[in-house]
Amino acid sequence: MGRGLVAAASLACLAGAARADSIRLYSYDPANAETRAAAGALTFEFKQRLIGTTMLSVRATEAQATAYLRPAADKALGPGGLSPLIGSKANERDLYEVQSKGDGAALISAFCPGAKKAWMVFGQPRQGRDLRVFVLGDSSDGGQARLCRTLDFSFHGEWRLPPAGGYDPNLLPAGRFPRS
Image (tube, rainbow, N blue to C red; front, side):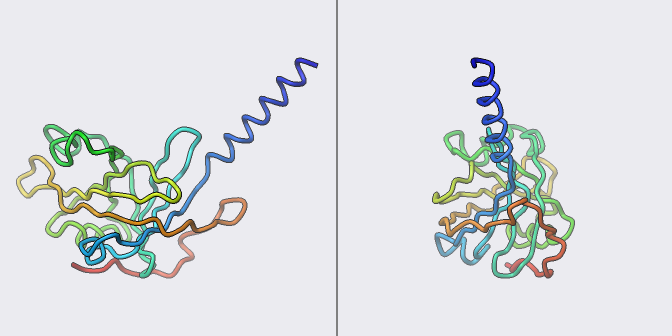
């Protein structure tokens, strides 16, 4: 009887872990005038794991444009890393490089004018909670990156994916990010 109980508990844990490792899409509305002008409503696609999340893309909710993200290391920002740019007390610490492929170059141009490379810094997205995103850009002299914008969003809702979690984002119509 003891082995059966252990096996059942193990299967329940594995099933829970499999459910926790899923793709989620949270939609946010701009929380202030600066965010409204620079970004508008955005949807963030991320992989939620049992412990932690990994951001995958940023979607312009109203324009159907997508920019892909890749986890980045603090050293990519230059001397001192993240803390000199956003402060040591900021809760947001997950750093992602904006990929220039697809609509990424338009996002970089809109969110950080003059930058050729950009990063976004997030906290953990949580259902029903607002989100702050720091946008950083490369400097023209090749030194420390710079803070381009602080974007504040109000949670709007979650887009539900098909039960298997599979969809092909390439089938969505192409759009563009707003220009600044």
